[in-house]
Structures are given as C-alpha cells and as structure tokens.
Image (cartoon, rainbow, N blue to C red; front, side, top):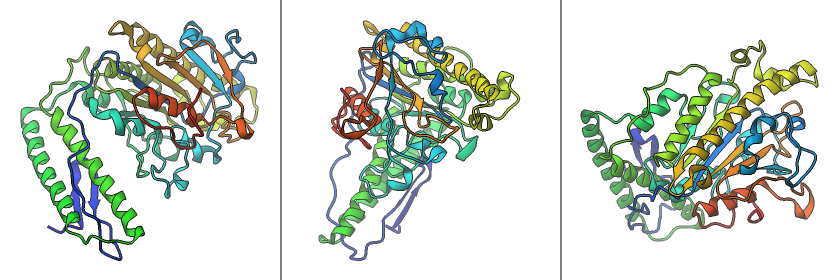
Length: 423
C-alpha cells in the first residue's frame, strides 16, 4: 500500500502524507486522545449558535437605554417575555471587513482568506469546543443550514484546517440522524469499514514512524499539521465505533417532510432542542441562509435584493417582517428549552444560546457593531449592554467566545481575535 495516499471515503477525509524536501520526520505514536467515558447528560453545559447570512435591521433592534431598563424595540418585541433570560449586546464584532464575504467569520473571528498561517486556522467556536468535549456524545456537534442561496450555502462552521463543515440541510435529514438506527446489515458493513479504516490509520502512523529522525523546521511543522489531521480522523473513527451498537433515542413523532426554509425553521429548532434533551449532542449551529424566501411569507421580492434596500421604506418594512419571523422562532426555541427539565434545572439554564449575524447592515455591507443576543447558559441576564467599540478598550466578540468555551470545560485563554475573557 502506498504510504503517501490513503483515502477514507466514508469518513470524508483524504490522508495524504505531505511531500517534504528533507524526507524526514520525528517519531510518532501513543494512544488516541479520545476519552472513553460517556457524558453525564443532566447538568452538562451546552452551546447553540444561530446565525443569519444577511443580518438584521439594527435600528429596529438596538435600544437606546442601556442596563436593565432598556426599552422594547420592534425586533425585540417578540422576545420580551424572555428578556430576563437573555442579554442584548451592542459594540461586539471581529474588526473584519468584506461585507457578504466576511459573514463566514461570525463564529471564528477570522477570515478564511487570512487563516492559512494560524495554528487553528479559522476554526469556528462550535468546532473548537467540539474538538475538546464533543467525544462525550454521539454527535460531537450538529451543523444545520442549507446548500442554497448566495455564496454557496451555509458557511457558519469551519474546522481547524479551514474546511467548511457541510450542513444538515433539512428536518428530514436531521430527524434521521437523531432517531433512525441503521439496519443490521448496515451495522455489519460499518463494523467491517471501521476495521479496514483502523488498519489504514495504523499503517499511516507506522509509516510516519519509519521516517528519519531529523527534519528542518519547515518539514517539522508540515508533519505536525498532517499528524493532527490523522488524529482527528482517528477520534472520529473511535467515536463512531463506540456508538455503533448503542440504540438511538425513540422518535417522539413521525419523520417530518422537508418543505421550505421558512416553514422548516420551527421544526429545525424543535429537533435541535430534542438533540440537546436526549444528549445526542451538546453543540449545535443553525444558519438562516440566502434561500430563506420572502415569497413563503407573502412577499414577492428576493431576500438579498431586499437587504440592499437603499433606505426604501417599503423594502425595510418587508425585511422587518422577515426578521421578526426569525426572532419569533428564536423566542419559541428559548421558551422550549426553558420548559425542558435538565436535572433540577431547565435545559435553558445549561445551554448558552447565541443569536446574531456576521453582518450588521447588508445595505452598506457592514461587519461591525454586530447584532448579538445571548440567552441561557447560567449567565446573569436581563440587560442591554453596550461595550467600547474603539481604542485599547475595544471588546472583540471573540472574548465572549472564550468565556463560552471555558464554561463548556475547554481550557483556553484565547480564541480567534480575542484579547482576553469577556467580563
């Protein structure tokens, strides 16, 4: 078997040993970093992020009064019953520019085009956390979105190697992932596939061990990056093997049909709530993309076209209708989590839910002063908080991500463009 190229098709990963001018590598080995213990379930910390590709009308979102006595705005009105369970932030962003082409930095703080020389690339916070604690559940994370709309579909989740995580594209597929078990024949085939792939991984590591002991620094960095990819595949393989014989939770209702992004949104939220409740995962993302069609809300316009409204009152009114619907579904999700028991608390108490966008104003292509709402997660809520947006006191959005990661049990003091932990 050619040690330079192994393809694990069912894992979706190509493990090609990179070419190195000095053809030398340090010895590698050791056990998998994957821990065998199952998650505790009740009381465990969870994280959900919801992103919108085209932003929100921030003039209709942000209040003018900070603190606990902030006023009700048009887009906050659907959330008013949950105001004590959430915090509205103004002034948080990543300091990036690029309009639509920077929206993908929402959960990473880093542009994909500028991530090549960073140790963690433009990894998004959901995948960053999943790499550390995702082994505790059947699915390290769930990425839900669409492959339609502008810019090639969902781009909310990114791996450390700069690869977009392909989304689960509708409630039917998400339902199958959560509740439909493989047939016995398929389970047997998976056992065989796992054995073959484990053998391939052993050969990969053995081949690396046989390489010479000394390398120049450039080749050392290249080999370390390669072995990180190998270990990532190893973790996914061991996770799949561990859950192969474990039955999935019983489905609470029949498999739903895919309709359209507007009508599917409530069901996607419900399935994510059930994924958390059944401890199938503790990390999920949902992106509302450019194929969220106004026609399904009775508006005969394109979403992207409306977002470039040029201050036309009618176009802005249509956008408010679209965005208010999205906020209403988010509110129902928060309320749903608050009704689900999790030990002696509720699922909302243990789930930090981030809602917002990598775009603040699609009309002017602004990626600054992002619309950000954080609900649940054991935080002290009930305020509208405005943070410094300029100078040495500026607070990056990634500071909040550091805090979320630490609460999830990840030992880190930095993430993306952070300058510290959010206070």
